[in-house]
Picture (cartoon, rainbow, N blue to C red):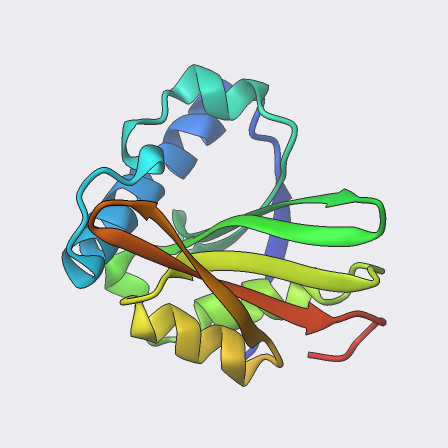
Length: 156
């Protein structure tokens, strides 16, 4: 399912608020899945979103921001920082559309990390050509899986 994706002006306070609203409800669900409620993005301020250097893209459904992905490209490596979908829109192809859009960006490879217990996210990334390359412990109760996909354009 292909959903229209737009570039978000996260420096605009109202847009940053919408991004924050979506990520809070989404990361609350993830926190339950991974059994860890100290995800930093749950405490992120609107001001921090407005001032960060990431590129934000989003998917709108009616007048609601249904999903958000942010990334940065450094040294030809595209690093996905966040991918969140409002729970109302889970399993409707929003995350897949956001990832497909990002795969249009020219990069040597793409990297992302997610909670090892977040099997829906890991399955999504793997369905888009990402492979688990490692795992790291970031807190007593939290392991993160590192995923990578080789680059080139239009490979997702």
